Image 1 (cartoon, helix red, strand yellow):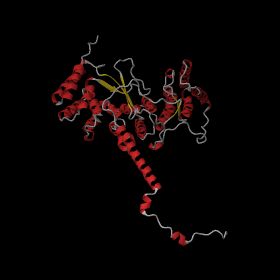
Image 2: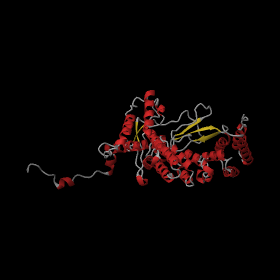
Image 3: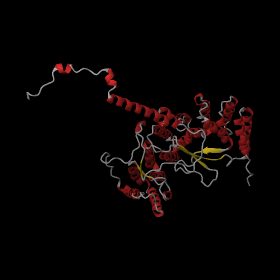
Image 4: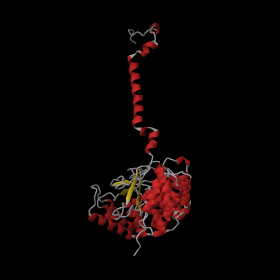
Length: 452
């Protein structure tokens, strides 16, 4: 040990007096720390004031839906990449996040296909090798792909193992947003393969469609599979379909599906027409108010009317505008269902309808009628050449739909029914906003010309 090294004595340590409180407050380091801390706190307060989304209150404001619908020129949808991961659901009701292709080294090698399925595998290989990186398909490429999908379906049941092998990759090629892609005839490669299964038919194809329904969380796939299974075996897969819709909506509500449009799932609920569907729709109305409300209004035999009436009577929504669209949907279907008309009249008598809601009720009676796309498997809509066709996009929940003029396909009897209801509402409504909106709606209801 170095003997020249001397430890400080205990006495020396003790003689070092502690800083007084006065000296702490006048210490430059302390003053600088206080100034920096004050600046940070002040900035956070300023930021939360200027950017309310950073606060809980701001997040609620961001999630509010518009009081009044405004049409857009085209539906704003996020364009998918050339190869898109396929959203999956776990077995037994668990939900997994969206996945793409399986990472190399983690998945077992696929089992060898039967010899008779190799030609089908080669056809699928040719389809999957088409280069979409340039964002377009030539007419020749699109026609060749359509022809290959047709040839695949013609292979019959021997093609099912090859189709299963591709579906198990959890990948898809999207044609929708590729120039010339619509000439293929399908929105994606998986959609073409699922349609091939429908054409093949038989127990093998039916089994693969059913197993795919249990795992996919892609809304358009679920809708396509629901339709195909119902056509092949009416009623046999209704419960499986309902489970798939419920699980996928739960997954979407947590944000696991990104910005995928879940509209096709609500159309599946619409087509099922089960008595339990109304409860599912009410449950999901907070996240997808327009989709849920439109579906309730179009359930068979008016089975969604009681739920719509509950929505407009909800005291927590009074004056907030959240139930305005439910009022509009009740007005839209009131000639078909007396309970809907009676509920509107009751709310008017009780003066429970906000001024701004009257414009939407008038729209429901005599204006535009809101609808989903006609074909829930490919997203097609009526011809855009219709001058009065309007498209709507709601950012919250990525809800997309269209409207057509109310008198487009009506007969004189239905127009007269709507006029009669307007007259009853005019008789009980007490505020000027109601009178003006209703009178404008009545004046716009013109009988159609007699059919030749």
